[in-house]
Image (cartoon, rainbow, N blue to C red; front, side):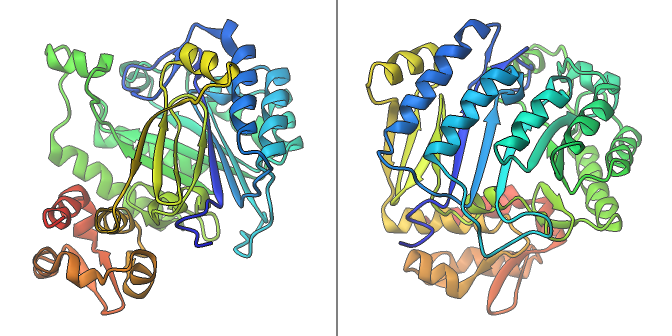
Length: 388
C-alpha cells in the first residue's frame, strides 16, 4: 500500500489539562480529572477496534496536556497504545533514534518519575509548550507555568529522553521584538534539537478572541509580527537549525517525522476525543465532547461524528497546499505519483503569478516558497486553491 493510503503514523489525543488557556481551540478538558480513569478505558476500547496491532513508524501523543496524567495513568495509557500501535524501525533514522515517539508536555507537568515512565515505553521525543520566557507574555496567553519551570522540565526530560522540542508563540498582545529576541536566545541556550514558532491566532469563540472583540486587548500590527518571524528565520539559521516547514526548525536529522506525514498529505491514524484520521483517502473526525466520547467508546458505539471521502481532484489540491509549506516544496514527479495529476495542470495561472512575483522558485523538478513566500504563505496557498 502507498503511504498516502495506508498509515505509517498515528496520533493519540489526551484532552486533560490543569487549566484551559485562553487562546486554545483544541478539544481540551480542564477540571475533570475524575474522568481520566474512564478516558483511558475508553481510549483502549477505541484502539481495540483496529482488530489487530498495526505497526507504525511514528507515534505522537498530543493534547491537552498528556503529562498532566499521573505516572500510573501514563503507564496504562502507554501500555494500551504500544500494544495496538507497536513501533517499528524505519529506514530513515535520525542520529539518535530508529523510530519516533513524541509526547507533548507543559513545563509544570513534567517530573523525573513521569519521564522515566515515558522512556520505559519507548518515548524518545518530548515537545514542551514553553510558549515564552517572558512573564508578561505568559500572563496574556493565560499560561499557568512560570519561566523557572522550564529548566526543571528540561532537566527531567534529559535524564531519560534524548530529544526535546520547544514550542514558542510570537505576537502576543503587548509583546515586543526585543522580548522575542530574548525568547529565541533563551530557547537556543537550552540546545533543543527542534523549535516550533507560531504566530498567535485569535480562534473564534476562544476567551482570547472574545477579549479582542470587546477591545480588552489589541493585537500586534502585522508589520511587527512579520519582523518577529523574519528574526526567527535568521536567528535560528545562525544557530544551525534548518527551516524545514513554515513554523518549524530542526537541527540536522531532527525534523519531526510524524508531522512531515501531515505536510506530505499522507495517511495517518487518529484516536481519542476530537482526533482526526486519514485512511485510504477517507477523513474521519471523532466527537469533541469528552463525556460523550467516553460513553460511546465504552459502550461499543462508533466515536466518529464526521466522515468525508475526497474526490481525486480536491485531494490533489489539498496535497499541493500542504506540501508547499515544506522547505522541500512540491516535487512534481512524486506529486503526480501520489495524486494522479500533473502539478502544472491544476493551477497554471496561479503558479505563473507566484513565480513572477518571486513568491515561489521553480527548478522544473520542484516548486518551493522563497523567503518572501514564507512570509505570505497563507496568501500563496489561497491563490493556488482559487482554481480548485
